[in-house]
Length: 450
Ligand SMILES: Nc1ncnc2c1ncn2[C@@H]1O[C@H](COP(=O)(O)OP(=O)(O)O)[C@@H](O)[C@H]1O
Ligand SMILES: N[C@@H](CC(=O)OP(=O)(O)O)C(=O)O
Image (tube, rainbow, N blue to C red; front, side, top):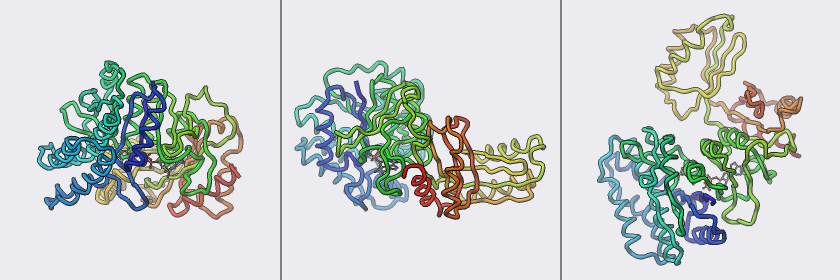
């Protein structure tokens, strides 16, 4: 049995719905389908999830929302009409959208989560109705019915282990099961979503929980490439890579697959195949356990992310002071801030943060507390920080990979602020200024692949 997830780009309009239906009809083992919300139909279009966020914000601000609600409904009705689904199906979608502002939520964060989740919920219902209209047996499965239980973090939730016990009870018969991606329910029965791009996580949870043989993830590119095709022209496709290579690359910018989504697949040892809805014949990229990879080159992929900021601290004899890091960690704990990396030298320490969890006020207060607690000789908040990640299982066995990464940067006068080799020895992380990120990727890519 295969779990098959279709991203928003694969379900943006009726033409894409048709391609998706052809794909699942061509393979009877594609029995479990996960849908995202309709994505962009053309450059400059707006994803339904973003429209729903605007809808929620309008409701929170007590502003008139009829127009945005109508705009969202039109995305579904345009598709439904092409498949001649019954008027009840479209009325039901309209009523669910209209009901969203009238419901009670514990707070605005839960309101936001419930609005966002309806992008996938309504699309899964519509998709099941389209299949039924074509005479193909299909059943929409609500995450509450399936027992997909999430933590109480409404817009950035994690899965609760109990989910897997619940999923093990699901029987797969002749009709296809259509699950909405991206959300589940807290133990209190409230809707919670994963972070953006989280429908990939739902697919992976189902692949583990339902013991799938393969998790197929359909998107809009023929493969995962060694570098983002928007940065490097015609990059090489990656035919096969390991779970942990994918985790490192998606964490640092390969947006084609969500970084948290790899974890349930690893736990269940379910291989992942990323494929193209617009060209399903192409092999795509296969993501497998380490012992199934034949290593061919030192580097598998290169990426960059600018979602980071860094705090640089300098103080002589920092290496001899017991409790220096602990004082800093206590302050981070006080502000509820997590850190991503903490490379250090004898007199220096850099703490790298994910910017999305920080606002100006928190940064100011946190830095003031750190200044007072550890009196550094020098302290600098670096906001325009990008992390370049070079990843490859082949690195472990090679000497000199770092030189080969640094040389093209030096040749292009790009200053390196930090280098960190992960303990797994399959990735090297380099801190550069945000403005240098794209050039760094291009130059490192050319050095290794051209
Ligand atoms: N290394 C990469 N290989 C392939 N695609 C990449 C890579 N890095 C970023 N992307 C981008 O990821 C996009 C697919 O992800 P996404 O837009 O989330 O798709 P979906 O809507 O199917 O979930 C591609 O169109 C491409 O622009
Ligand atoms: N629709 C949600 C979740 C998701 O995973 O979407 P996509 O599969 O289109 O990346 C989002 O836009 O974040």
